[in-house]
Length: 361
Image 1: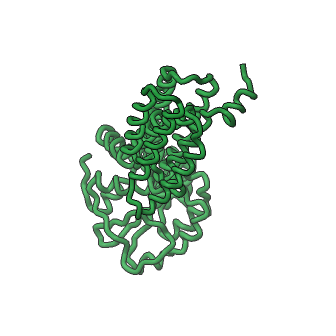
Image 2: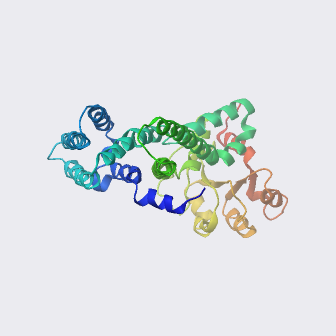
Image 3: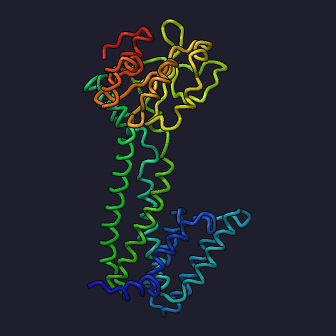
């Protein structure tokens, strides 16, 4: 039965509420130096204090010895002249204010062993970069099904990486959550079911916070990587941006054509409001630097209006769109736009033709 009063007491009054706060402060970098990431230190504290808890001592004596071991090990974990020393001293002060009874220390010990160390391991198992997964998956598709499936690679590249990493997160959190629940079941210290829930949710909340930080570090740039992958896979030659060419166009890859002119490839999900900036590179500017065309590889074209297609198309900018996209189908059959749109499935053949290459794959 739902008991809001019992939940309130577990979150605000129970000693087990500190499984969350101990976890947060052990991983706090700015205030406490993130000593929870020092696994050798954490493991040594767990090992030596658990040995004391098994001794025939009073609770007060056990608490005194365990706190002494913990504070001494934290102090000895870094040089007194280092910046981290003062941060770890801050943690000791915090710890001494929170650990008043032996039960408080036991909560701290359970946090170290069953939340902090497993969370560290779980976070380390989550990919920091989804690029390698994308490459492997894309290679398998192209080797098996051929270059006609480049469209599928381009349109699913982002999702491949995101799904891979999120699945890795799910695997870790479910595995560690299951292990934590089993450990709690075997733990002899007295707790209520709601107090167990405070421990379980402390793990989940901290895992999600740290996984979210890692997620942010992976974000961005993924779609731009696909151009490099395709050039490497098919052995195309790329080169640096033409000297002194200045424009607002974000070009991800340049390649030289067999006639000595260049083509730039821009990989973007959508033009959005960038199109008026992109239009600053007019045909005269392109010719001045021997740029034949700019190719835009778009995976989302719902906002690609007739105006955008015709205005930029007249400036030698071409849109590669999904083969079955209503926007592509409409534009390719329109006398005023058909020269400015091409299907993504033909991208590789078009690059090969411009470079004078004969692809057998």
